[in-house]
Image (cartoon, rainbow, N blue to C red; front, side, top):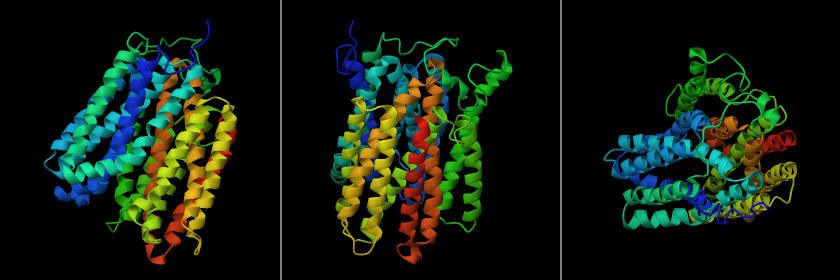
Length: 475
């Protein structure tokens, strides 16, 4: 009997629509909330808490990612996935009704907690529902789900905010979320998605993945003590370290604002704490670039951070130094989103070997960032940045879904949640640390003209170069 050739075939159509709808909802809400938040902060007299309203979502998601790893590996991904949607919806409803900025920040924490659960459970759900040869196409579809919201989301949110108020931006997202959750539940019912895997030898997955410990355990999966209190307590080490990491993320955000005289000490303490936490949350060998899963997880952190730093400072440079209007400065983000989707679609076709996708994707991102950096040279036209960002978006689109597919392939069934969590934690924590440090240095260099932007782009290009080097050990 031939294998199913499409994620939109009768057997998988509902699950695909649900997963796609959930990714679309997250993409739209991300773009819409970013647009509506300035108006909300002004109306609630909460500008001093504006940065915290974003940082707290990242901090809360770090904790929920580690909890999702435990939950999905023990009982399957469907329940945590639906729970994550429910918590996210609750956060959106409370945000829409928030009478003060403090309560809006609390609601944003719930949104971050829910999105962290969903991020891990979604990856494991794809592994449970789709056979190996269809997973690349499903991850490519998730990338495509981000395309339209990234282009029209800010404009649509702006119209809603201007004509109806910022609260309606938060109030409309739950409709999308609940619709996606209903489709996911219906499409995966009876598929075995929520079956708890047995922890036994001979499970499916790459045997080499047994050499990489599950995040936070400090030992290889399946090794260690006999069942008992000690082992039960060991399971909760990862969430405990995640709390430390979350506090570090918040301290980084506070220090990068440089509003207090002791910000350098705060920044240093946050970096030290975050490094300690990351070493406990990621597989052993990640920072030593051990071939296979550890390097794959390290690559995700480096690649995502490089792209995010450039993505943050490129539009700012266009507005601040080249005096472009905001919509034109954001053009690079739009073209990058389009080519990201194109790269993900090509990766999903399975025509290239994974190693080829990772290495060529890293090379394309590095080349694109290097070209985009030429806009910093006096006299060079602004369109050079957009040309470069076409290549950078294509490169990350080519590599991202390939990384996700390989992590699931190299994980035994009972490790899929832990390793999916590690993949996302690597990106979240590395990005948070880099943005905090780069933001603080950027602010300190502002009086030196374009030196601050040269520093930011330089860090992004160096991280992209490191990504290319690590890619050779990831596949």
